[in-house]
Structure formats: structure tokens, C-alpha cells
Length: 287
Image 1 (spheres, rainbow, N blue to C red):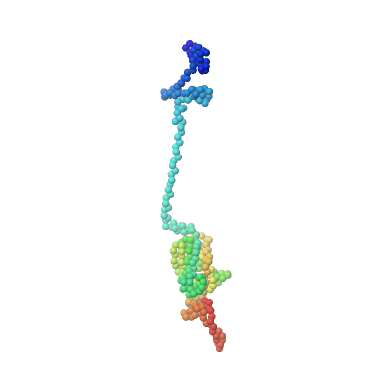
Image 2: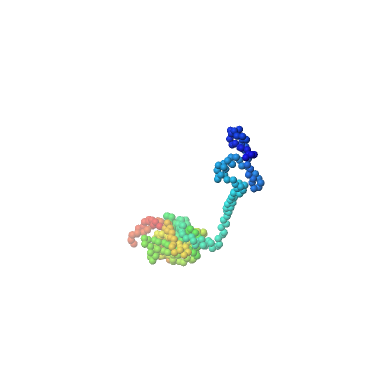
């Protein structure tokens, strides 16, 4: 057509055809919606012709990257709460805690030292050995340590003494000693004389006709409504002797000189023979 100019893509064909001219690179401009121009290069235009499905022309809005960015809110910071300090328990709190802890014995001290109160008052401080040696018809002291304070309102306790191979209550070889408020003569009883925290001091009374021998000690405790008792067997023994200082005892001596001679002395003289021929010799009493 007149006015048209043939454009040759290959430069080597210039001059072979009349009116042929070298190819001129044309820059295309794409008018955006806002009136701004967006340039499209030759390489992109060529690639779009080869693969139109991969390089479709998009409007200006599709090139706005900011429209497709999704913003995610950062997670809220963790709230750290500080626990409140423990409030003081009410007055009955300790009582409730005492009910929950079962009472048990941790240690028993028979206060058996030679220079201690028991051995001196019972006139047994001259005996050898560290065991508790006492005389019947007279009180003696002992200490008990528990796992918690003893409560007279909720806890129960009693002592048991056993002697011989077959202890029997009716024969006096198995003794059950209750805890009482005040001691009376001629019976087995125990009274609390001092209590500090978990420790308790007892004064134990024995009758004047108690069986003489070697006793084993057991402490039995029970807490609240608990039907099952807790038993503690002491590793220390108690030796019970007659008591010439006790008026209710059958071996009572009212003369102190006689008690020293016949009870406290380890050695002395004994007499032997007949009425017409009497001899004397030194004797070791071993008292």
C-alpha cells in the first residue's frame, strides 16, 4: 500500500528490496490507570509472545505488590503473674496440721546417768553400768521425743513394761502405765511434768509390790480417730530392785545405818557356825 514502509528484520536484506530500511527498535508505553507510563522492554515483549500464558499483561493494580502483602499481628506478650505470699494460717491451722500428722516416737531417754536424778534418788548411783537401775515404790523420770508436739486433746499415749519370757498382766510381769493428771500411790502411773516443742518429760510411779527384774520398755501412741497405734520399742532396759527406803515395801528398814550396812556396802562380815561355835569371815555382797 502507498505510504507503507517495508521493515526488514534481517539487516543483510537491506538493499535487496526497494524501500527496505533497517529495523528500528520501537519502545512501547503502557498507560496506567493513574496516567503514569510504564515501559515494557523488548525482551519481555518477546518472551510474552513465546509464552503468553506465563507472561500475561496485568493491569497496574496487579503490579502493586503492597496490595498482596498480608500482615500478621505479633503474638501478645506472655503475662507473668507473681504468686502472692502465703497468708498466715489461722490459729486453728496448727491444730489441723497436727491432726493430719500421725504421732510417733523418735527417741526415749531414761536419764540413766550415774550422777543423774534417777540414780541418786533411788540410791543406785554406786552400781556399775549405764542402765537405769531404780527401786520399786518410788517415782522416776524419763524423756520422750516425738515427731511433732504432743496434743493432750487429740493424742493418746501409754507406756508398757514387760519382764520374763512370758509377760502376763495378771501376774504383774506385763504392766500398762496410763497417762494421768496427778499421781497416786501404790499404782503404775505416768504424769507429764514438762513439755517443750516435741519433747516431753514424764514422772513415772511404781507400786511397792512391783515384780523385781529386768524390764523392756514400749511406748504406744495413737493420733485422733486413728485406730491403728504406733509402737516404739526402746533399746534401753529398766532394772527394778526392792526398796528398803519405802515403808510399803516388805524389805523396809527404818535404820539408816542398817541400810548402809546391809544394802549399800559391797563388802562386809558374815557369821557362820552354831550357837556354841561361831565364826566370821569377809564377804563380798556385790550390791
